[in-house]
Length: 408
Image (cartoon, rainbow, N blue to C red; front, side, top):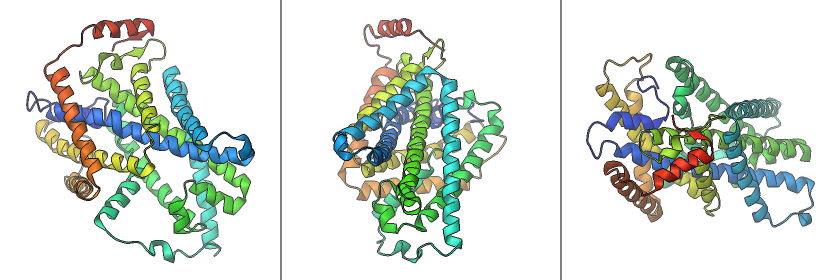
């Protein structure tokens, strides 16, 4: 964010690092990363959050409405999850200021509930009313694939520290504020997540946590009964909505930057004349997220897929960091990351990807191979050869007129 003061996050880092090294392969890593991120990683993450949102929201409805009066559970959950994605999309398109204020309110609500929940767990632990922590790892089996899956699921919860670099151009004094934001936010996340997991173990058994889909609701139900369960489920539903908002906000901005760099249709880098929101990039992101949501994939496969592609890109991005140091040795750097840290990240990321490819089965290898090949073909046609689709430019201009969009 300081050496490359542009929005776009990891995408713009790859683009800046490699684009000048080869006329064909130079821009290919950034192009592949963008399309995998824009069509798989963030939409599948949004789908995961929407699925969880529907679970918690359905739990609330069951408490107030007789199950006989509810329509089929699967249909209702699909409606609730899809509604969350659509609401976020509409809010993002309508007003950026309202969108940010909504994020602030949901964040304050989330932190208030987390502090209260951890306080309850601390009271139970210090008063001796908590259950025994000893059997926490009882019955677990160590394997390479199990370890990689555990890391994927665990690290999935901590992902997002790089989101701030996706909106670098919208941040005041990014040279200092990006570093402070990442350090402070990741510290808060680590403390709160660890505290919450320990808090859950004061009341719930490891089996109840592992098999439950609404863990905090189960925790609140045991402590406070149905009223506590309602409050917990409602709060987590709002938190999941916040997570969907953050992902959509970040990824739509990356689509905007990729279009500006010539790696996506020009319409994606257009913003609305009044709201100043990149409406086309948001709409496309919402549509892809809905397709993932209705694809019928389970949570485990979606998170597995997310972890596989994300850690592959993290490893390549750390390589790009060394390339940028060599490419811009005299660039202004208000802080410098010790070289040992990116080396460790490279080793961990490629180890996780390697274990997954060897042990996870054929489906991930097939998905990775098909996507990379297909995206490379698109890159060759539309970026390297710069082929234009007949009448598409006119269609984009008409869209700009109809929806009052303007180019940057």
